[in-house]
Structures are given as C-alpha cells and as structure tokens.
Amino acid sequence: MAVSMAAPPLLTLPFLLLLLLSATFSCHVALAHGASGGHGLGVNYGRVADDIPSPRRSVELLRAAGAGSVKIYDANPAVLRALAGTRWPVSIMVPNEVIPDLAASAAAADRWVADNLVPYYPATRVKFLLVGNEVLSDQSIATSVWPRLVPAMDNIHRSLRRRGISSVKIGTTLAMDALADGAFPRPPSAAAFRADIAGSVVRPLLHFLNGTNSYYFVDAYPYFVWAGNNLTVPLDYALFQGGSCTRYVDPATGLTYTNLLDEMLDAVVIAMAKLGYGNVKLAIAETGWPNGCDYDQIGGNVHNAAIYNRNLAARMRKNPGTPLRPGAKMPVFVFSLYNEDLKPGPGTERHWGLYYANGTAVYDIDLTGRRPLSSYPPLPAPENNTPYKGPIWCVLSADASKMLNETEVGNALSYACGQGNGTCDAIQPGRKCYLPNTTVAHASYAFNSYWQQLRKTGATCYFNNLAEQTIKDPSKCLQSISHFFSSMTEFSIGTVVSVRCSTD
Ligand SMILES: *[C@@H]1O[C@H](CO)[C@@H](O)[C@H](O)[C@H]1NC(C)=O
Ligand SMILES: *[C@@H]1O[C@H](CO)[C@@H](O)[C@H](O)[C@H]1NC(C)=O
Ligand SMILES: *[C@@H]1O[C@H](CO)[C@@H](O)[C@H](O)[C@H]1NC(C)=O
Ligand SMILES: *[C@@H]1O[C@H](CO)[C@@H](O)[C@H](O)[C@H]1NC(C)=O
Ligand SMILES: *[C@@H]1O[C@H](CO)[C@@H](O)[C@H](O)[C@H]1NC(C)=O
Ligand SMILES: *[C@@H]1O[C@H](CO)[C@@H](O)[C@H](O)[C@H]1NC(C)=O
Image (cartoon, rainbow, N blue to C red; front, side, top):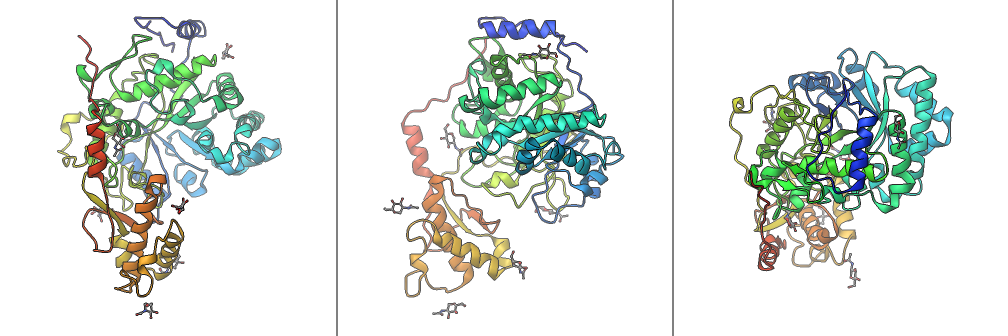
C-alpha cells in the first residue's frame, strides 16, 4: 500500500522538498509487516524484576491487555518458548556486550542466530531482530561498540540470508539523544543527528536500514520532555488531549502539531532526511508514561499513565502517521509489561508497567484501542502533576526495614558512607546521631546524607531498591532538601507559561 504524502502548507526547506519528492518516486511502502498486526499495540516485556509472573502467565496477561506484538530485551529461551504458537510478531535483541564479537566474525554472528533464533523460529514468529539497545546513548562504549554496530547488523543480515530467513527485519533501538538537541528539538524542522555519530554511525545505519527495507527504531518518551519543560509544555499536549490552544506550528514547515509525540517523531524523520534518508520507516520501540515516581519528580501517576496509553492505543489504531508522514503505519511498542523493581535510577524507572509485579493490572487498558475511552471506570485523581515543594528525605524503605537483610543493608550503608565528604561522620560512636545504634537508623542516615550531598550530580535514592524518598520527617538527625526555595527562584526569574494558539 502506497502512502500519499500530503504537502505541508509551507515548503521552505529544500531538504523537505527532496524528502517529499523521493517519497513519491520510491513509492514509500509502509506495510506494517504485521508488526502491530492490526490487533493492538506491541508491549515491551522487560524482566528486570524479582517475583514477576512466569513467561506462560505473562502471555495470558499480554493477551488480556489486547497486545498485538511483543518485544523482549534478549532471546530468553523460556520466554521464546512461551511465545511459540501465539502468532504475535516478536522482537528479540542482541545484547550490547556481544556486538563487537558479532561485528568481528561472520561465524560468531551466525552462531548467535543459530543459538538464539533458529531453535524457536518460526514457531515463535520473530519479526524483528534488534542489535543492541540504545547503544549510541552510552558514551562509555563509544570506541568499543559504536563503530561495530552496523558491521554486526551486516553480519547478522548475511547469516539470515544464508539461512533463507527473509521475514526477520534487523534494526537497533536509538533514544532521542541521538539528536543534537535531544528529545525536544523544537522546531522539529531544526533537528539533526549529533555530530559525533551522524557521519560515522548513523549514515551507515540508515544506509543499512534503507537497503534492507527495515525500520529506524526510536525510543520516544513525551513524559521526559514534558517533565523537563513542565513550565512551558502543557501536560495535555503530552497526553494526546490538547485542544486548539496547545497546538504547535513549526515555523519552517507550517505543519501543525497536536501532540508532543508527533513532534518528536518528525524530528527524527527530519534528521534522517538531512542525511539523505528521509524515506526510512519509523518504528516506536518504546513509549509510555510512568504510573509512579519519586517526590522530586512530577506527573508519574496512574491517572496520566492510563490516559497516555489509552489515547496512544486509540490513536495508533487509526494509523495516523505524523504531520510529515500522514497515514504511515508504524509498529509501536508500549513500555512496559511490568513495574520492574530492580531497575536502578529515579522512581519513574520502576513504574512503567501495565501490571504490578504480582500480576495485578495497574489500570484497565485495551491496547487494541477499540474500547471507547468513556467506558473505562474513573481513575484516581493525579496528585503530583506540579512539583512538590516541601522537604524530602531519602531513607531505608519500609519494605527493606520490615524484612531486614543485615548483609545487604550493611553493604549499602558502607557504600553510602564511602561517597562524598564526611557523609557518615555523625553516626560514628559518640557523635550526635550514633544512637539509636541500629542498622535501620544508620542506613537511613547514610542514605539520606549521601543523597542530599550528591543528588545534584545525579545520585539517586535507590540503593538496590533498599531506599525510598519520604516527605514524613524521619528523625531530627536527617537533613532534608526542600523544593520550595528552588521553585521560588524559578518563578521569581519570571518564567512565563506560554502556549501557542492556532486560529481555527
Ligand atoms: C533507499 O532505498 C531505495 C530502494 O532500494 C533506493 O532506491 C534509494 O536509492 C535508497 N536511498 C539511498 C539514499 O541510498
Ligand atoms: C519543571 O520544569 C522546569 C523547567 O521548565 C525544570 O527546571 C524542573 O526541573 C522541572 N521539574 C521537574 C520535577 O522535573
Ligand atoms: C499487587 O501489588 C499492588 C502494588 O504493590 C497492590 O496494590 C495490590 O494490592 C497487589 N495485589 C494483590 C492481589 O496482591
Ligand atoms: C541477604 O542478601 C544477600 C545478598 O543479596 C543474599 O545472598 C542472602 O541470601 C540474603 N539473606 C537473607 C536471609 O535473605
Ligand atoms: C569533597 O571536598 C573537596 C574539598 O572541599 C571537594 O573538592 C570535593 O569535590 C568534595 N567531594 C565531594 C564528593 O563532594
Ligand atoms: C552498636 O551496635 C553494634 C552491632 O549491633 C554492636 O556490636 C555495638 O556494640 C553497639 N555499640 C554500642 C556502643 O552499643
């Protein structure tokens, strides 16, 4: 099926013109490859958690949510066996660490295919083989992995061809930070790939994707863009429910954006076009909204998560494409199946699930998008859509103190005390916070002291899931950080909340 590209009202940029012309001539083919199967959004099935349901039970939960396809972060045999016979298109992944080996040796790439794909295929309908996850976001592997990414993809491709497997598309996932201005390159028409990767990695990657009729897999999270720009970007615009006052018009193209995700996707399209590959298809490898977050984050709640994912499902069912590519079909994978409690970082990281780890749904969702939005039961009111302004502490979590593991907590305590300057001076014998002399009290002191001192440099209140933020004053010994003063500063600078209104 050919997709006709409606001409945007203002075509000022030559590359856009080229983009549109080449789209016409090459008869931009946008079949979904059954990726969304026409039966609902795909789901990322991540397993960085303890005590989540078995793969077989997970298949039932995916089905209950109306999932149309499944993406995993490895090629786990038990998961692939559970997915056999489900007829879902499945996306599997080569871990970042093995990319250099697969690039260096065609035999190694073939062995990876033989070990991780062949035993399960085609009973498990593998559709996508993703080589690496957000490889270009990790500066620490810039010399070891980045230059090997496309060669590894090439070797995997050759292996599949030799084996006569033609229905598996090869790709790699990239976060929005592949773009020079990150996730929010406004206007989208100004977007370009980062200079450190554009010529060396992205151009050969696009050449590969174009030549194999595969997809650019983007991880696109309007949540993070909104959170980081909460004073200027309206929440409704991020949640697909903006009105005429929350539209954004790209001044260079004249294209009107009704939601943040479209802006982000078109930024990627523009960046690709600037490298001469404006026709490469897009797939959304990850998107979603957190159902919970820390006190010093905003907008992670069940209400917003449900609204985002329900609206996404209803929207994608109609294959709207984007303003630059109206009607283009895109495989879309929601992140994620479960709240994953073993993910480090801020609280949002552990709260993307459609289900809690115990298999209970976080909220009702029909990923096919067929269920009318008005038919869902009421959602809990959101309580953190604006920044929390009171004091916050980081303490040993209620769960961790209830089921105290002295070894684990002791290790975390020593780690915390070893960071920063004088982090644990006050809990040394004889000092003012030594008593009560308990692991619980000392751990809370150490976690908090560490976090208050180092959070500015990115330290989080996590400690292998032993810590949590609290807004209840835990003890006279614990200093807090207050958001009140930082927020006051923001407002006194005179930030103006402005939205563009279109005049229709
Ligand atoms: C992309 O692929 C198409 C179809 O194979 C080809 O005609 C076109 O020249 C390719 N584009 C580039 C920039 O290589
Ligand atoms: C809210 O947005 C402002 C700037 O727009 C940013 O500095 C602040 O960190 C954001 N708040 C949160 C909790 O992300
Ligand atoms: C599952 O976990 C959630 C979150 O911890 C909890 O609210 C819910 O009650 C649990 N459900 C069951 C059946 O235990
Ligand atoms: C405590 O944690 C350690 C390290 O994770 C683990 O090996 C050990 O089994 C745990 N002990 C108990 C009693 O759970
Ligand atoms: C500790 O203090 C020294 C000297 O004041 C300073 O240079 C260093 O950055 C501090 N380290 C941390 C982790 O705060
Ligand atoms: C503090 O607690 C540790 C561990 O329980 C114990 O060995 C030590 O004797 C205690 N110190 C005092 C002064 O009570």
